[in-house]
Amino acid sequence: MTQRVDLATVMDRFALDDLITGYAAAVDEGDWNAYRGLFTPDGRADYRGSGGIEGPAAEVVEWLSATLPLFPVRQHLIVNRRVRFLDPGGYPETGDRADIGADYVNPMRFASGEDFVCGGRYAFAARRTADGWRLASVVVDERWRRHG
Picture 1 (cartoon, rainbow, N blue to C red):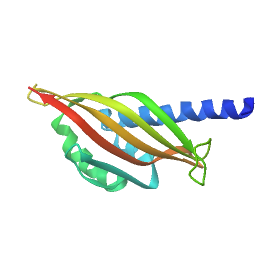
Picture 2 (picture 1 turned 60 degrees about the vertical axis):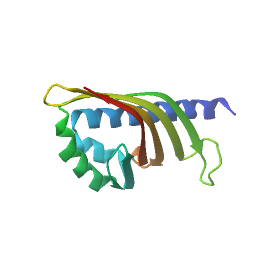
Picture 3 (picture 1 turned 45 degrees about the vertical axis):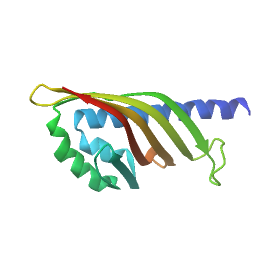
């Protein structure tokens, strides 16, 4: 790999990191316009693994905006990000698509003051667009939860 390709890969990793952090911030802050802007026009979100719904991100955001006010305090911590770049043929290389696996812990608080914490793993798929990297999909795999 040349030094130029290495720099491009590093820059792409920073951009993908910003994309995932932007996702967490949009959900935690209830910034649904920002949430919509993170996805490709055909982007999908799948929250069935945590008891939610699946569908086009533009529709799922309506469910999120109606459901998450139950938790006026939310804070995603998304860690251990593993990025795999794919070229247009689907082979691991630097390319215009990336799969990102990441672990999460999500402490929240009900309006009643009761705490709720869950954790698991995200599977993000991203595509490079004319506007930068965008989410093609997000899938939540909740592995544990605690409340009380």
